[in-house]
Image (tube, rainbow, N blue to C red):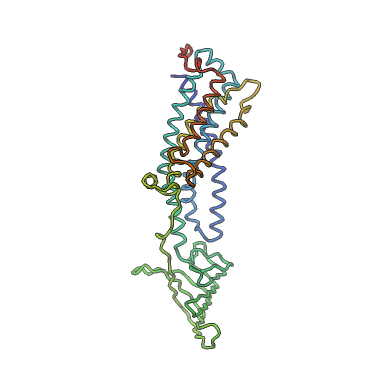
Length: 364
């Protein structure tokens, strides 16, 4: 129907605007964190873009329910402020009809949210950790920051480079100190570059015009070698030994697990989809304002309810993880309480009899 499409359009436009603003705020902070890791040598520049997309997917799972909530609240508040809801009511568009339209949209968003939280977001979290693992497992030379000392893998020594090109394949003025059991090796070179053996795939750094000092600390039998070219094999860690976090665990594995922490994570993912529907129920009565009040009159109350709702979910999750409550009760009691609150708000405005009374829309 035309009125239903109009209401959905108003909500979607506001929802999209809110989502974009919240996403940009969240991603700006993520972007600063990613570039700080580039400066620290943890990430390379070419991995930042892929990491940013993965972060956006994970962030979207958190902001979508809030965007829907604020989208309904602000869109309907605008309709009340401009007296459009009064006209719709006069045409027979009762609260139940409005609620039915909103719930149809909320169910669609809840399905999308469930797909993100149950499938896409865990994959994005897993891929993010894999990227970190792959970057960390790569050579020490990739993580060089010119002008700073860098600890070598497993803390066996330090490396210092005065100058390096953008992709860290060519360096100048290198100093490296490395321990191998009780043997100390010190290398100083004028320049160097990376080299990958095509047959074995081993990575080397080839140093030019330098000296190598090798011996035991406290002894005077050091070996001093002058060289024009010297190759040093660079050990790389196995990225497969990473211990992945629970957020990246596939949903099917959580379902099969008997651990309370896994059950809490599974219920939390499902709850994010239920959250969309319950927030839509809350937003409809909270959006009712008079033209004198303005569209932001009940925004503070709405945000307070949202904070209370999400905090209760976090508390219930913590209780479930610790075993203080049964998995059967889990996080579901929080949703029941908030549904009761939403129905009370609706009853306060219309009464149950009027709410479910069939009304005929005479306007088009």
